[in-house]
Image (cartoon, rainbow, N blue to C red; front, side, top):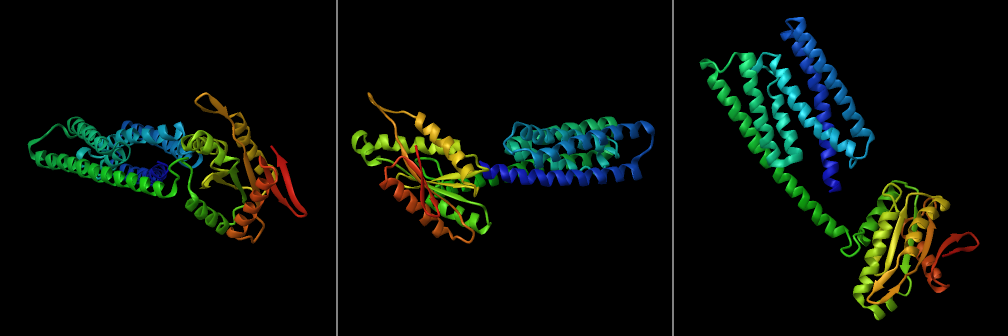
Amino acid sequence: MVKIRKSDHILEIAYSCVRWFLLVASTFVYLNYYYSDSQNLLFFLIMFAVAVLYMATTEFALHFTPIASSFYRKVTRIGVIMDYFSSIAIIAITDGTQSPLLPITYLVILHASLYWSFRGSMVATGMIIIGYCFVVELVDGGFLQDDLPRHFFNVVFLLMIGFIGGIIVARERKHFVEKGIFENLAKQDYLTGLYNHRSFQEQMREDIAGKQPLTLMLGDIDYFKQINDRYGHQAGDTVLREIGSLLETSIPNTQGRAFRYGGEEFAIILYTDCRQKATELYQLFLDKLRAKVFEHGKDAFQVTMSFGAALRDRGQSKSELVTAADELLYEAKTHGKNQLLWARVEGYLSEQH
């Protein structure tokens, strides 16, 4: 879903650029070839002002608001309606159905198909044909005998664009979704929903190559074997799922990411080289873990975790950073568990839970 939103976002940016171009082109065409009286000019200036206001709002939504926000979704989807009325209006004041700007309507159809697939494409096509008929009656003087072949082929071409364009967009969108599902299956852990060990290795490689400030935490569930032995593997799976959920909800995507490293081990990449900031993010997770009570039949139990954490030094490789955090985790497990262990110059710094 995230990839689909990013793809749609790129298309919206492209549509925004096209709108600015068409606004300039339409203004040039109207003022140089179709401007005839002050009444039409006033109508055009009102349209121009509304278009600039909407397009400026769209630019703000595209570049300064989150893709998943309600404001972003409303502004971009209103664009289909704005494009529709704008295209019909500009055609009406530039020689009706003989306007050189008639092909703008094809972009409206494709824009609708972006959000509502084949159905949206056909609805948009139907609305444009209705608008076309209004323009014929109000501007062209009705369906004159000599113009019927031109109207016929214009309408047929609109239908073809809507039908074929809708099918192509719907098919490509379906393939894109399926591709995303298969990619997620390869990168995500099926049990916890977190990204898996392979994704962790790729993320570490990308972050280090991009010289991202990093803190790596490796965590292990304490006494996990006893949980499986006493309550069964289904209870163990529940513990893994819940911890995965707690990690995902505790770490904002902009500040880090959690992974299932393997078995009962988890990895957390934090985009900071400040130990205090990393500890604050970790504490959010720890507070939730402490409050979590697992139930199995009549029994209830809680779990603890041990962590080893290492700040990446300048020039430190991926394997060196992982080894440092792993060694700290081992120390935490063998020296009391239920703690976060940080490295320091003269030894280890332990933070008991």
